[in-house]
Image 1: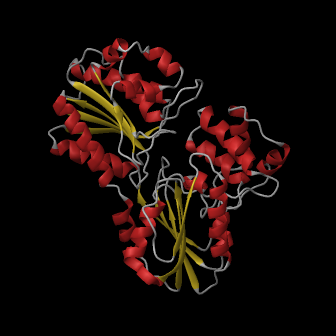
Image 2 (image 1 turned 45 degrees about the vertical axis):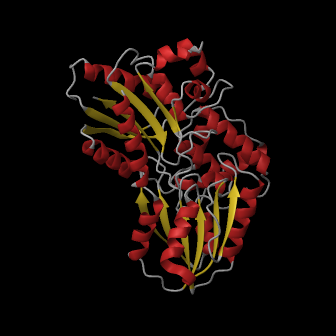
Image 3 (image 1 turned 180 degrees about the horizontal axis):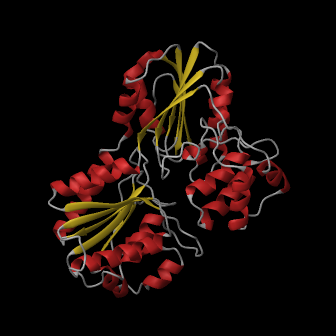
Length: 415
């Protein structure tokens, strides 16, 4: 079992390292020729790392920059750039302050300027200025409803972008006539540019009818002003933007597969588009793991089954946790008593929900360990309290903020 845990740790840390934004940004910049004065705006959990990589390559050619990232994700000053740490997953006053700085920078650009726009996961919450008639409290309320509803990221961003001054291509419009060169780390399945950070520099592919369906599907409570804004169509073209996607969950899965192969496992990427309830994904992973062990499957041990994507949690309890922790914990019952399996799930950004953990890892002894401590697995799951349960048995995955964000990955290791 110790070898399985060592291998899991290696896959976690090395796959994250393979998807850090520095090299990705550098590669994107090598292929681009800037034709004017360079200004920079970076948003998202990986914003500081992306901005630092850009400065390392372009230096003083960057006249001015604004970097907006999550609290504790900045690693210090970057020359010519103002760094703002703000709230995630819910916006706060610092979000508004940072976004206004970015808007002021963009408003001052002319035809001789070019904006280097660096986008990573978390940008929807971190880059926000409500449209007139909408307050920050309104934004926090609707986002809280969406995050607890079980809606996926595309559905969530359909609503967010219609209430914002900078989403749905509006920031690209603000930056005109300057050209915008956008470098993206994708945290959205399918790499939909209009959904990554709610598409501040991308034309919106969703419609008013789509937004209405989301409101009705999840029975969202919206104010009269919000309802009117949801009736207004969003920009459908951005002609001053060039975009490069530098990383995604597919690259994360491939990195994990390569590392697993080095460690002696036959890797199988089962999906890079996992999008379902975290609890159901965990139970499915456990069922698959046991089936492999029974010899009734085409996968033969030692193997690593890899599932990339982003599950959802429909929050009904009052506990603490995240989708990766809930996925892992939900798998524990199905593999109880097995000596040759570990299942783990983690977020590439190092944070899973409102916790300091990236995810969780379980094995055949996890269920018994929980029972020894008087912890009822089903009650914990029903209260969405996976964090405290996993912490009690030292089965949290803690990496700290990684500086990247390309979705989540779950892995079954079967020796």
